[in-house]
Length: 261
Image 1: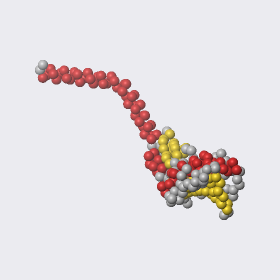
Image 2: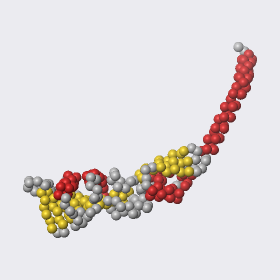
Image 3: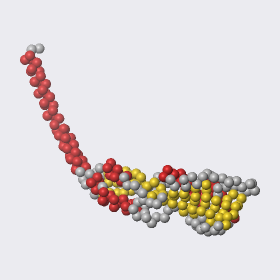
Image 4: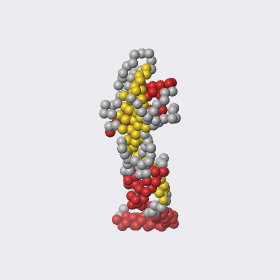
């Protein structure tokens, strides 16, 4: 094939390709137009400002109100920019919030799911404990909440919470009294104060067994107690009752009384 002939062949192929492309234009142009419209619409929707924020989660009025005020004052920029990650991080930075998840409900609503720390007891003078024994600062507006008080060393909160929950389950059968405080000293000695003022010395071991012994004794003998009553349960088969300076030792069996710890 000569050079001239090759050039002619290439020109004919190019011409045929151009004709084919022109024939496809009626089909291509509508597709391009639709894609352009969809892209423009998507960009427009993505740039729409947040018009509504929905807060969902298992929380009380104090948590919801405090969170609404805090959102208004602190995360306007993150919400307005649809920055979901930053919004979550800011909310989870609150000491009374356990977890948060922000999602977008198209086109202009942000949904914020919140899991707050739910207080079970007071810890020390100004903090709360959740059911997992985690310490957290109280939500604004919770100053008047009446909760049992747990106290001990900083690394004892989980142990104290487990004991508190166990004692509460035993005490739930009685409607006239509740736990007021549970404390552990530096030697591991456990003391319990009831809402009627009675103080129980549970010692360092067998706390639930000793507490159940007290409940059984109270029910069996229908003993009347007062705010000055102190009951020492640090015996393996007995308890000592002190009422205004008078102490009596009650045995749970005919076996010799043994002192525990």
